[in-house]
Image 1 (cartoon, one colour):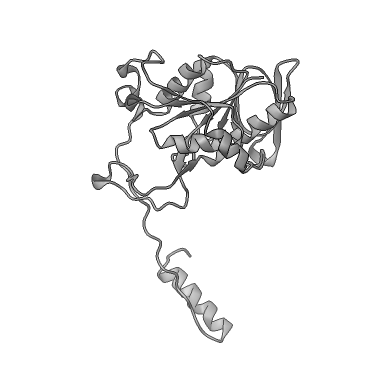
Image 2: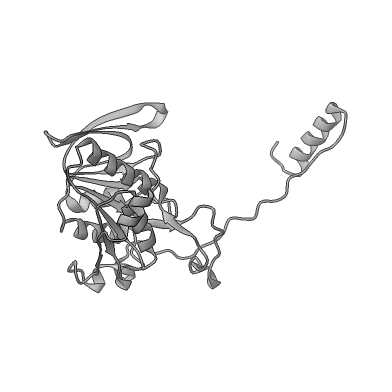
Length: 267
C-alpha cells in the first residue's frame, strides 16, 4: 500500500500577522512556520495505515514551498514518513489553488500511489479546494472531511466516515486510488521521537522544479492563476470591554440595558 501525503507549511496560528506596505501581502519576517494542523492529521493517518498493514508500503510526503518548508518536511520525516518530494521553484510562487493542485498532480503521477491524504483545508487561507481539484486532475474519487478510515488492502477500497449537516455521519466506500481530506478528530498526531529525529536527517528529500515536471512558466504561478488577490486587510481591532459596577442588581441591569440600547445598539 503506497500512500502519498500532501502537506502545506503555514504560519503558526499564534503568530501576529503584519501586512506589507500597500496591503500587498503578508510580511514573512519573524513568522513561525508549522505543518498545517489538518495536514498533520493526514501524516499521522498515513503512518497508522502502514502500521496496520504490517509496515508494508511506503509513505511519501509531497510539499510545495520555498526553502523554509524543509523544516516542516523534516518534522514529518521524523514522525515516520519514508521520503519526501519538495516542490521548490520560484515559478510556483503566486499559484492559485488550481495551479497548486496541477503541480501536485504532476508530481504524484511520477510516484506509485494507492491512497492520497491531504488536510481538509489549510488554516492560512481556509480555501478547502486543493484536494478536490487534485482528485479531478488525477481523475480519481475523493472524500472530504474524513474522520475515520478503514482500509481493505486485499480489495483495494476504503470505507470512510465523515460528518455532514445536522450532526449526522455519512459512510462511504471508495475504490482506490482516491484522495481523502483529513478532518480534526481523525487521530492524535504523534510527537517525533529522538531516534526518529536522528533518522530524518538521512532520509531523502528530493527537490523538484517546474522543469522536472515538464511544466512551462505560462502554465503555473501568477501567469496562470485563475484567481488573483487584489488586497489584504486586517480585521478592526477589538474594542475594550465595558464594566458596569454597582451593588444593586436591578440598577446594574438597568444600566446594562441602557448601554446595549443606546451605545451598542443591539436591542
